[in-house]
Length: 160
Image (cartoon, rainbow, N blue to C red; front, side):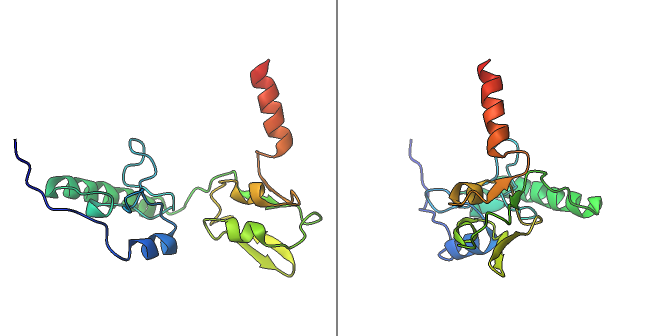
């Protein structure tokens, strides 16, 4: 058996595009989907969808099918008229915040800004990943529904 295929690499500017839009990339440089089975055309950034060879080498029928799925996903957002936000977003305990900005630099979604010495959360951009809460040295950042006391209670409940 002989397989004839040319080498296929992601675009040279894929890293810049991924950084600008908050898209994850695979080890070989292609864009990653949110979940291979549950969200094959979705990315971690709401409203950005993948189709075709930007995700991996694909033939024309697969690219066309994926493009149809991406278009349907985008159309469903337009038809809804509203966007449902994730209820688990970061929140700041202002009294504890020293304004060091470590959480701001660690946020992969750009949802945090340092204003007047205190961090503010843009709830529309926050995806509830928890990176800011893990980074904050003063424990001023937490996630709604996932603070330390709630997580410890869940662990104790699971062990009983």
